[in-house]
Amino acid sequence: MAKVTLTVNGRSMSGECEDRTLLVHFIREKLGLTGTHVGCDTTQCGSCVIHMDGKSVKSCSILAVQASGSTITTIEGLAGNGELHPVQAAFKEHHGLQCGFCTPGMVMTAVDMINRHGGSLDEPTVRHELEGNICRCTGYHNIVKAILSANAEMHSGRQAAE
Ligand code: FES
Ligand code: FES
Image 1 (cartoon, rainbow, N blue to C red):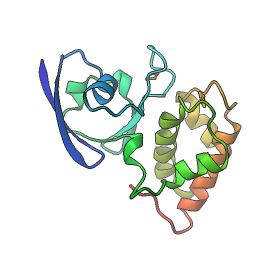
Image 2 (image 1 turned 120 degrees about the vertical axis):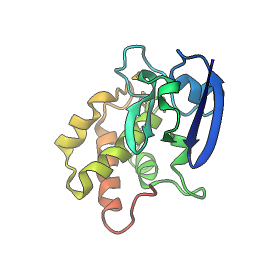
Image 3 (image 1 turned 90 degrees about the horizontal axis):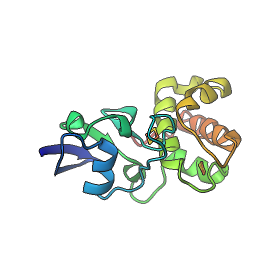
Image 4 (image 1 turned 180 degrees about the vertical axis):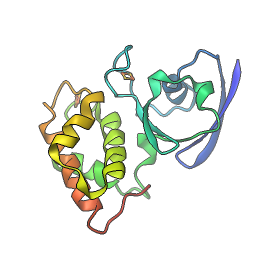
């Protein structure tokens, strides 16, 4: 057993787990943050994407012990004071989700891609950057629209919450 300490959504959290425990299971089962999902066992679907030290990562492909000491943001930490993050609001407005299972990972990926590309994000780049996130419901089109809309909003004065 190992002790894992993380800063999660701005709060210090710790727990014990086996050395083999995946970060996604630690987040869901030890920390009770079940917005982060598991959709595959081959690191393809991206429903487990979180931010670790500011970068989007697939939390199913990292051991919890490897992440110890890092700063994590999950989907639960994105909204500030009950107000949706612009990417969350855009997914809602543009109907970028149906079952919602891929959505937490999609949103975390989208925030990271917007942060990295600044105001220059375009549709081909969004589609390319979404190659690590699979959705079985939407056909992606409304997800792309939502991300481009959020990008425009976030680079017209209202900056991202993180
Ligand atoms: S659970 Fe599918 S990529 Fe992580
Ligand atoms: S909304 Fe159902 S998998 Fe994407």
